[in-house]
Image (cartoon, rainbow, N blue to C red):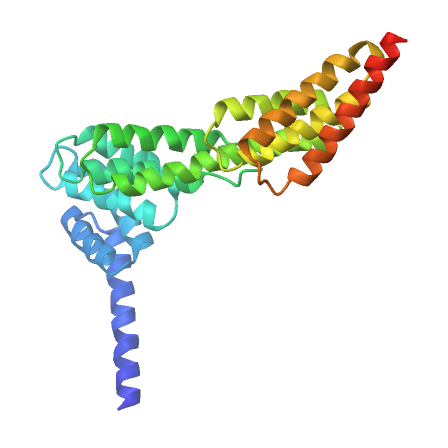
Length: 268
């Protein structure tokens, strides 16, 4: 019995492969369409895609074109070819704006760009592009069932930009380029006022200002000490129970001593 089942499965497989090969070579577009649709339903997206690619031009302007183009777009998405999926879904939504699949196509186009977004340590061109696409989808289809997911994806991408900006500012601190670090953290705090990284950003801005002031030339020392003290005040006011508060208080104490010494030196 087991052997019979095995033989039947093998025979079915060969018949399926034979039919697919026959369809690839056939001039019968209806045959290709029907088999492609069947293969798509079975999750055989790569095979369906090859058949669809052969007949897309022949179906332009025909009643079946809309469904064919949607399935064709979807095969790219299911194959994880997000570059082409994003482009093709965008074309579909533009070509069939009244289609019941237009909103979904617009969303999947935007989500394809989201899937292309790299780690925050890499260049974030695709991330910014994905945010723009997702926002455009939300603006165009505010009632879509996919809006909630689109907002979630946008938040993930926006946090990635926050991580990128924070990492750059922190790297300047690490390599002791304190002026660049302060400027970068200032920009970060302005660009991302509600960031979950705000506490660390305020602390490392203080840390950079502290180190810059403590090692400053005399002509700029007082100004930098006072600026660092201002950053300390801002940090403590915002995060009085911060994990960095002991270290920050220590910096403040050092800054006060230096300011006192500087004042005494001037008076003498």
